[in-house]
Structure formats: C-alpha cells, structure tokens
Image (cartoon, rainbow, N blue to C red; front, top):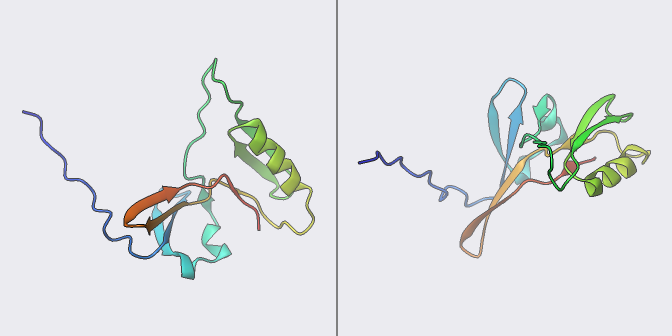
Length: 119
C-alpha cells in the first residue's frame, strides 16, 4: 500500500498573498497590502521556462536595456509586451514571472503567476 502524503492546507489564504522566490532558493510570502517593489530585489522567476524541440510556443531570453540583463519569455506575445516595456521610458525594471498570487475568491483558493511586472 502506497504511503499517502498529507495535503497542504490552503485554508490559510484568507487574505491575498504573494509568494516570491529568491536567488538563494528561499521563498517568502507577503500579504498583498504589504507588497513593495524592493521585495523583488534578488528575486528569481516563479516558474522555470522550459523549451523542448517541437513545442508550439517560442520561449527565450531577451537582452533588456532596462534591466541590463536577460529577461525570459514564453511566447511571441510575451516578447512583444517585453519590447514595449523595455522601450517605455517610465519603466524602471522588468521582472519575469515575479510572483505567485494566491487569494480566496467565492470560497475557492485561486492562484496566478503573472507574465511580467514592469514598474
């Protein structure tokens, strides 16, 4: 008989939170009302962009003038949005898949990882 793992309880998500992954491998949960731009310093993308020969979408790395480094994208639509953000003078940074948002909506826990954060 296979050992069953305990399921993680999602009942703690009574307030909207953001989970941020950092370069040292740690993860931090921040309530949305306390989230600040400095929370993304030294952060890593929430998901890893995977590329397999024959995939229908086109992922890659974009050399961003705004960040002075590489920003990952998962589709041509994301690349187009990335180009717009990179050439928009008020944009001071670009973070790819910066966080995982979790909130309880109509009694169900929902989560989403946005493509970019471009403050």
